[in-house]
Amino acid sequence: MSRSETIHDLVQSHRVTAVIHAAAKLDLAEAIGNGTKSTAEIARSVSADESALRRLLVALTTIGICIRADHDKFSMTDLGRQLDGKADPSFKDWALFEGEQLVQSWSGLVDSVRTGKTATQLRGDGDDSYAAMSSSPERIILFDAAMVSLTRSLAPKIVEACDFSAAKVVMDVGGGSGELIGSVLRQNPGLKGIAYDLARCEEEARAHFGRLGIADRCRFVAGDFFEAVPRNADTILMKSIIHNWNDNQSKTILRNCHDALPPGGKLIILERIMPEHPTTDAQDRLRAMSDLNMLRGPGGRERTETEHRMLAESVGLVFARTSGVGSFNLIQFDKVAD
Image (cartoon, rainbow, N blue to C red; front, side, top):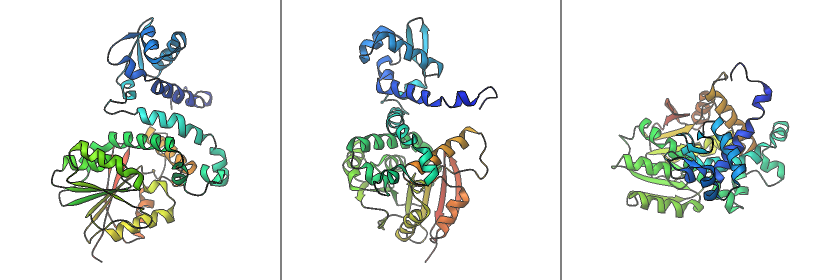
């Protein structure tokens, strides 16, 4: 935060989210493309009021999404092009998810802080926010697309940070539609892979493996990691899974991973690690905000490295190493001989 910023400035941050969401919803990045277009051209393309759209485009220039070429022509910046659904990386689906689901959820943060309960619990819809969300196909589609976009942006860094030289079969527990395991197998042609998640993810995962040309090396297994984890892999990946759940639930998942691994097997967890002493650093702020998102959402938390180690070691796993992976951290645990 700059010295000149005030509470008045900070409290209006939600307006930036709303502006970016509007740009994503209107498909502005796709409409403008790599060129420079007039407001009239863009308005016709996205079916918007020309005068109102010009005002939105001006706002987008102030946050680095657009560039105003002259009085009435605009182009997208490199940052703004990330709102194009076909960009690499693309965060369009995350912008839609943030603007349509998370903003609504955060509006009840005070109630969660007062009670320690999630939004789902406060509504009386049970303890499992994911089960409650599954009753709305539209919300599931938006959530899944947002998770894919985040994983896709991190996958190259994850693949680079992980040592798969001794692995034969890698399983992504909670692997969704297979974005991460697909990236791992494409960069490691000698590996076989498994995506393990709920049955609703299977169709898209199989289609994804087919598009990548790895269907002969990667399969989907449907199941619930609270009940068991398949015993078919020597290396298990879990990205953004443990932070969703409380300590007891996390121990159950970790114990099932431990039981599934052979002696000498590896468990690689990818999470945002909370600093022991948070500062005003942008990464510390990101982790703290994610922690509150877990409080309001599924009921989990972002944890320090010490807290991660305590959970894993309580089920018999042995800490091996940790390293940075973009805004995330890789924490590796090993299973020693029984």
